[in-house]
Structures are given as C-alpha cells and as structure tokens.
Image (tube, rainbow, N blue to C red; front, top):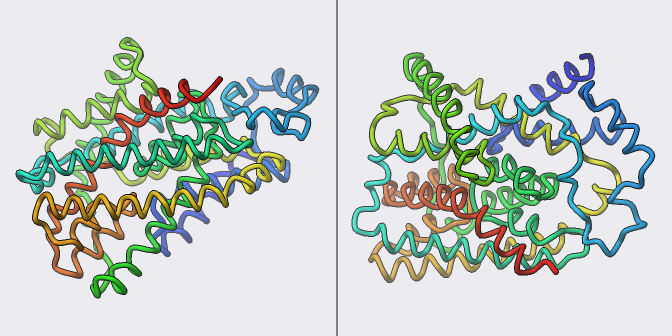
Length: 380
C-alpha cells in the first residue's frame, strides 16, 4: 500500500504542474511519467495477485531483451496487468462516457450541410493515420497493430485505454500519442501566426455545476453498467471503453443525457489509472526500444500533419469555408489549441469544433477495426 500511496501522491503533484502549462489530459501523462520512473527504479507497486507470475517473469527472459531483436518487439499484452482489472474497466468506461458527452447535438449542428465533406475528410485522416502506423510497424521494435494505434490522429487518452484489450503495446502507444499531441499543439499557434497571420489567446472552459456533475455520475453508472456487458455480449473490441462511449454518444445526441457532465475529479482519476497501467510496465530495455522508435514516429507524425493540411485545402474547396478554418478543422489533434486559435481569429468556431469532435469520435469508433485489419494484412 505504501508504494501505491507514493505513486498516487507523485501523480497528483506532477499533474498539477502539467496542468499549469495546459498539457492535455495532464493526469494521464503524469501517471504515465511517474509510474514509468518508479517502475524503472524498482519502486513500482504490484498487486498481491501477481506474486506468483512475478517469479515466473523473473526467471524467463524479457521479450524486450536483446536476445530477441528480430521479433519486432513483441508487445506485452500477455503480461499480467499492473492495475487491478476492475479499476482499469472503470477508468476506461469513465473516459468513454466523457468522450461520448462531447457529441453535443448543438455543436455537431454547426457543420450544417458540410457534414459529408467533413466525414470524408475524417475518413481520409484515418487512412493517413493507419498508413503511417503501418510504416511505423515496419520498425523492428514495434508491431503493426501497435504502430497503427500509436499514430491514429485523435483521442489519445481513449487509444491508450483500449490498446491492451486489442493486443497492442500500450507503452509505445502512450509515448507516441503524447509526442503527437505535443507536436500538433505547439505547431498550431506557429502556423496560425506565420501562415495565416492570426493571433492566439487562452480559452476559458466553463466548469459544470454540481447538478450537472451529479447527473454525470448517474450517466456514468448507467453507461458503464449497461455498456460494458453489452459490448462484451456483441464482441465489441475494447468493450470497456467503446461500449460505454457508444451509449453516452447516443444519449447525448438524442438529448437523454441533458446537461450531464463527468465530474473532473473522476475523469482525472480515470486518466491517472490509464497512465499507471501503461507506465508500470516500463523497463529499461523497453525504454531504449521506444527511444529507437521515436525518430521514425516524429517523421511520420509530421508527414500526417502535412497530409491533414492538404485535406484542409480540399475541405475549403468543397465547403467554401476559409482556408484557415479548414486547417483548424483538420489538424490531427490539439482540440483546445484549435479552439483558442479559432476564437482569437474570429473564425467559424462552431464549424471548427464540430469537425474536430466528429474526427475524435470517428477515430475511436473506427480506428480499432482499421488497425486490426491493417495488422492482419501486414503480419506474416
């Protein structure tokens, strides 16, 4: 218990620091960072139920060791989960419901008649992501499924949450996804200023009321309680996340959810648990392997960004919206940076935000199937 308390305390402290500099999903990144450091130095907590398997793991060669360089770094989805399964399912469900509540019908209606071009461009973004992931999967230290999930352009927290259930390496996905978020978020203000001569500003997000948060708790209980078993019943991949997310999305679009909002404390805890699950599995060999992956990943992230910008040109031609609005609508991530740039420039904020939300939902609902299909095609 002491080690779990240490992990939680350090995660809270680092999360507060990251939140001050506006890092997206700061508790997840903090949980990943703190858990990885504790795992590497040998102070990571391990559930008692893993006592027997830890002995076996110590006796067997680690799959990341130099004795298996040609195995394209077999992912460790078969390794025992560090975080208790019940906690992980609750965290996945919480993130899924939160993402589902983003599908506000008033916001989505901002697309108007442009919904088809935005959907087509979103599918184009998904195709670019999976193609980039397939190329990353050619690297000796990553498999095709993990590569595809690592470069999906949207929903970083959701992708990290569902990777283990799909059979991928959540450590690689977590690191590469947050490198993507950092690169995209940092380049949006630069492109806005240098290319479109637009200013930037901070965005103030309204905090939900206690009534809205109480409704959010009820929505969580229903969506997780019904969505999880239903997702398993129909063999939905990553049912712990996608089942509750599907129900929450339907509830939001039909108006049943009303003004329900997931409490920020519960969301932060869910992010931290997901970060812990990825971080506690780190080892020095795996860290070195991810270091070898990053140069190729950065090049592919930048290439996907350029491809998305070209899709923005197509979207502008198709819809008649300004080039700047369509660039913001098609950036592969950084939704809060996008919102700040759109607000400061007096852009069509409703169109930009609706396109971004549709992209995130599309990535999380379709990417697991696309990534699996790509992995089956590319894996001998």
